[in-house]
Image (cartoon, rainbow, N blue to C red; front, side, top):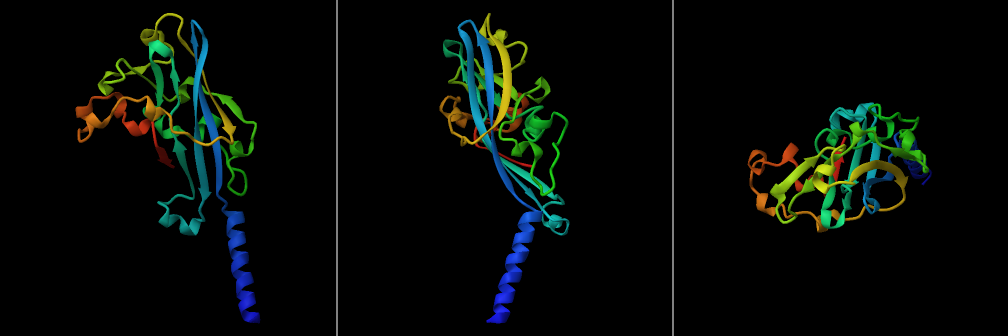
Length: 220
């Protein structure tokens, strides 16, 4: 019994040491899109949940050679502008590979504190307005019943699609305790008609697909 107790203490100690030295961490951030309109500011937001992990050097061969990793879940935000249509965002294009943590640092990967916790994730009051280079791709459908009417919208020229008095005001992120929601799929055009077609045959800008709006799951 004494030997068994020693083994149990040893195992518990090893597990505790591993969790302390190579912790995992989960945080959520909300992305909000604001648009100036003739009737005032309109906005839409969504929550992204991110899981971060650290892996020992001696195990990196089973993790693709990586010692740090992140996985994100959620959907892209959109702004309903009434009879003018909907301004969507899509995690594709120049923004696709830097959903996080660049949105926090603006300088590539953000720093990690000892113990593997991202610096930005422990600041519960964190808020930041994104620079244009870190914007998601902006998308507008001329006809919400036809996915092939998709257009990529330049941040400084949404007036082209929505009319005078419409301007992109800001894109912001902030750490939150809110949970990711499923809303954008309710207003997206039907992508099923593109099923089985190649990216070229679909003819959509940046090769955008439905998964760039919903069901985000990105590994780093």
